[in-house]
Length: 257
Length: 372
Image (cartoon, each protein chain N blue to C red):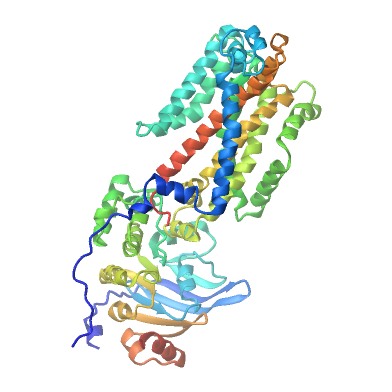
């Protein structure tokens, strides 16, 4: 309980993401079943669940990397439809970090960071560089700015990827298993950056198996299985007193070793 | 008592063992590593022995270097280089009027300077120079070669010929086939069925017919379909044919590159809010084209050599003028045809090998250390 008490919440009453009765199919396969999720501004959500449970697919629907077929997703007051203008508007407000970083290997770290501000936000180059250096300092790698992604370690690359998203100054950040592809000794440097970001009041949705991170920063933990949201709760309650059998089994599998 | 085993001392870096470096080791490793390898080495040595001395003797040592047709007639068993010296101008300019040949020279000089400027590293304003060479230079070259403006006498394209014609066709093909190919490749991967089908039909049509029939159709059949009095310039038809033909090949090369780009790159660009064209131009194409440089240059080289096919629609390129020279009764000597063709081969080889070398240099330059 003590840890939860220390946590400062930045949650407000404003709903920034509203997912209602969302369904998705891959061909005949029903991957997401009737998802309902409201995210408040400043809220930090950790989504966990076994592989194939649809957790990545769900957050990828929020910025239209995947298309949903039924129900509605409203991000920052804009409904996600086939309208490209809406999609672009939402993508400007929603940053994303991927499991495999997806940095652009032909561009330097700095170029990776200033590309979208310059082309999408039409920021003057000088200002974009200033912003990029600010965020690279925040993720503690300003000295690598002129290297190429291939010359950096995995942990450094993921931190660059976070900085690259932040350069667009998004309201919401999505993390799709940001530490799963990293060597063990690099996980903590990425988590530190994410904790720092959480402390600054960013709205975050993280798909991750880092339960320590969930305890430390999450306002809410969501457990998914078979394309459904099985259980959601505050982290302490979720870990100490899981309700469903499926959750108990999952937690015992990931915590007991 | 603890059972830990600890190494405190840092081991020094040692040079590799002497039997793994040096020329003797190289020979052992590369030429004589196994019975099969030894057999291949002996075979290669025999092949070199059979081919090289004879070739050197014919082309250089015994060859006729100076004099005229008579000198060659006296020694018909070796290359007759005076043939090339005498016909040199025809090989380069074709039937371009002698008093206007400075215009061809000037156009070629501009081309060489421009390309050299682009190839030399760290020259300022490369972007503008590139744009100049792609947009302004063709206009200048056309005005110089064709004339009829600024007091330059008009030289009809049927007078153009020789190596300068080869360059005109090859460079036009190269400059147009790459962008058209890129657009076709993107179209073939489009989500829109109409665009995709148009691109597939276009690509498969042009890939499915031989270039020679494309050229033949354009020069013989096309006039039959066009209304009386409407005529296209022969050279223009050949240029369009060659460019579209190579564009279809280029499209498939580029498509290969597009497919090699991981899905994550598309998603990374999408998640940042880049539009389709921004994503393609800034993220996907720079990487895809880099991967397929060998294929692109392969297509360029193929195109360069295919220009010789314009012979069948009556345009005399380098090979055409050489053949015309061989047919000259003053030079009906046994060694002349061989010399002519050897000369043509050498010119083509220099051009194609040059492209190949330069492409390898570019590949190295574009390598940003992400190949793993």
